[in-house]
Length: 485
Image (cartoon, rainbow, N blue to C red; front, side, top):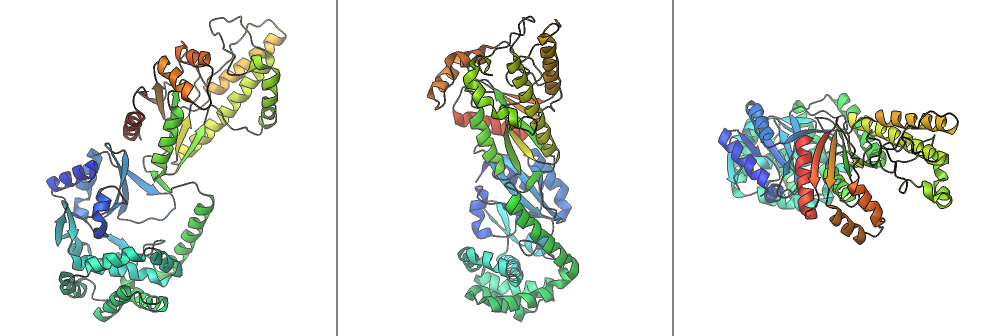
């Protein structure tokens, strides 16, 4: 059992909150270990106390991007610090169920599930008679659609195991009485036919016919009238297809909003490794994107000039970005016109990309950045040009370019979270030598010993020493990031 789940169970018991893990309890041990989600039904009178407990454990509320609204259903995610796993609580305050695409039934079964429970690994679970009723209804209403039927066939072995687990002697005594008391509109003979159909893996046509009959009996509990249901189902189907074809990754967002998260630091501090890990870690759940602000993509304005860069690297080696060091303490020092123009084009591309990702974050997306510009002249990924004295001619044009570059960097929106990485220079040199693509040692040393450090006064900053094992660094970054999101 994960540590955060153990703490949650303990706090819920201490607070006397009425809840249960209401479905798929055959696989409860897996869910408690972080495999899949935990489906928690909570007595609605305890909803505020329940969410207060989640807040003490730093669980965060999330929502689906696709616009389907299920009142009484919430998603919460918490970080299990020892393992670095995100734990998903799928929280219900009413028994809302139905097809995968659209859950259109709100069944009056909360009392059946909440007030007749047993404990397994400290977690209350419903008596099997009540869970059996819910299982049969959930599975059968899905069989009126071919796509749902095919999806269920793919997980047929698990469904059979779950039905065998639920259909014991105790459940056989309980479910007829519970069905008559709480769902009198569902005839016991129809329910038994549905149960037999599931147990015997009947042909699709039989499933389809019984599903239609069952839906008729359950229409009292529909959330939507028939026309609205079909219209919404069609809309959701189109949106899901579009998301599969053109969307990027998962479709959940934190309700607290998106964020631009940037990893900065000198060479060989582990930026790329942590960017990749954070992208995988958060990308398992949330809608994210990843960008490189040190090497931004070309825009319409810079596309053609940037095509010439590989050629110019061979012709003007003295003007390469990695070899020119701007001496900000010497205002009289100038650089070539080629270098100045190239610096402004890079500033433009970074400015455009920063605006793009800021908009994405404003719409709920998490954006993971490798490096991030600052307005600090001479710092890494920051303005490169000093403003020369106005001596007319070439200097006047260089002055214009330097001012333009500074203005672009000053207008770049701040990142929400900066993760600043550092290691001793000796460690950085050793790591650089182990890379496939090595930088010159002098370049690495200059990056680590530079007196000019990029400043991000408008961003929340996490200072991390990566002079430890990769596992320790990753664990620290995940913990501190989760606290800030």
